[in-house]
Length: 116
Image (cartoon, rainbow, N blue to C red; front, top):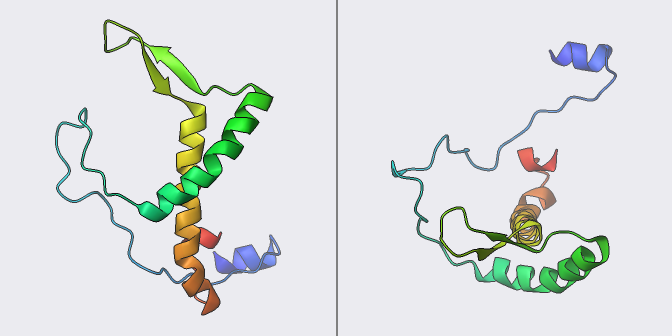
């Protein structure tokens, strides 16, 4: 396959070194996934999210993105459910934390799967 990538597509192929093995599943996964599991506090991610929140809120207001939604699927009374805004902030703050963790590997020329 590498010969095909190099000759036909003209792309440079490199060998990828993984920083750590990727787990195939979560250990001790409960059979009932309808309840919320334990949350590990991440102070750095929370600080990043607090910096992103005002920016994301402003962008959501300017572009008309959904910030919350009233939902009564599982309750008698509608409750406000965080929506696109909260999802985006959480995803971006986790991504930034992961990129900051990988910086040491990048500086030592260890290429990881997340750089592609």
